[in-house]
Image (cartoon, rainbow, N blue to C red; front, side, top):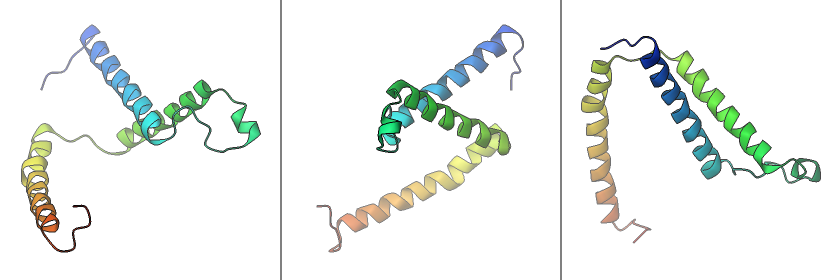
Length: 110
């Protein structure tokens, strides 16, 4: 693993936080109502939409940072083991379950 210093570290650090802000803005727009007020009341509707978007985005970014600071970082080998030994088998089993469900008489989608 490479440890960066100086400008290289700053670029990676800024890119990570820019990505965090972009994902937060997209999550707010898609799942939290974007620029709309959460409460339909004249007092809340008077606040401009860009303020609501900024406030909701700030809350989502704060949650990102809080969760990231709370849990320890995993090493690369731990993440690879988790993916290969847990996530891929669970995904394959779930794929079989969904396939069996689609061909069963209890299927409500097709």
